[in-house]
Length: 369
Ligand code: GAL
Image (tube, rainbow, N blue to C red; front, side):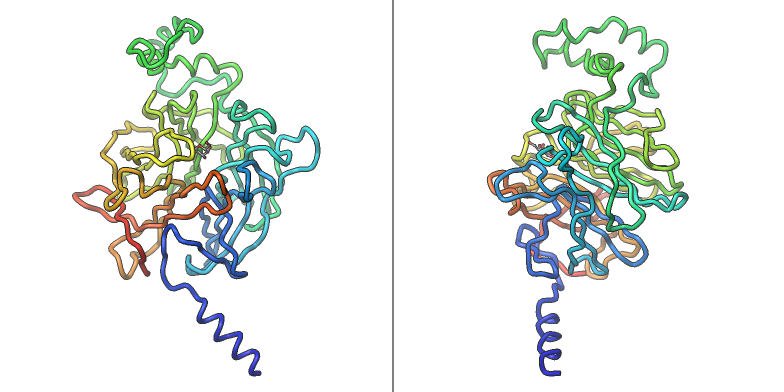
């Protein structure tokens, strides 16, 4: 009885009541949460956090995608490995591949949990630029790997009409010896890389998933050598692209997309492309997922706001209710990468507030809700 009481007291003492960005975040076993570049899926009353398992000395995937569960978003139970890398030689997800930014969405029609992630084949650096898809019957998995590939092979973006197709016909990536010249910029805008990769499929790296109110789901990813974001609609089972996609900010060099919708407006926060090093967040809005997307100034406020507080966006979680302490309904989530000690990477979770009708993310050392 005494032991039970003691155990209960320790549990209560260890209970986390606030969010402290940038610090170690112990799970129910006392170990720092290992779910980087992640996202959250709510199923029933439980939040499931999926992310990249990072090892101590490499960012390559030696374990796979991990899953944690919580009902209060502060105290997380380790549910283990949701999608395991494979020991089969030549498997797309062979141990030692690069498997990043996993996101899971629930399909109420098929009753399946659908996981999408950025995949790079083992030993090929970041050349493959594929997305991977896995599926499970239970939120925490185990997830079964289905396939990986590039995106939307043989399909033009929805905005390409006869005029655009005539222009693109004249473009040839091999003719551009120099990047970032005005002529190159214009050509990228007109689809230089979309055309180059038309046959084999569009490159697909940093990514997120988004399910709209009408149940339609979208895969949002860095494409075209990380120069341009693509937003691609998914099929009804959330396991494939439907073939409809649009381009956002051609040659804008956006990564790490995170998206939410507030009062009919879609807001997207991204980063620039500086690898593991932080840079200034960008923000876009659109009246429809199909655009037009308009760029706004950096939404971050406070110390190191010009470097996204040392982090890089990964996900924005909508809450059903307003937080009781802060006038906010959304949590902005980012990663503070530690490339030399990847498992020690930290998390930034901050509420999104609105100022003059636009989202802002203000640094807080500690906050409660
Ligand atoms: C970042 C990207 C990460 C990872 C990293 C590798 O820009 O957001 O997910 O791919 O580059 O350098």
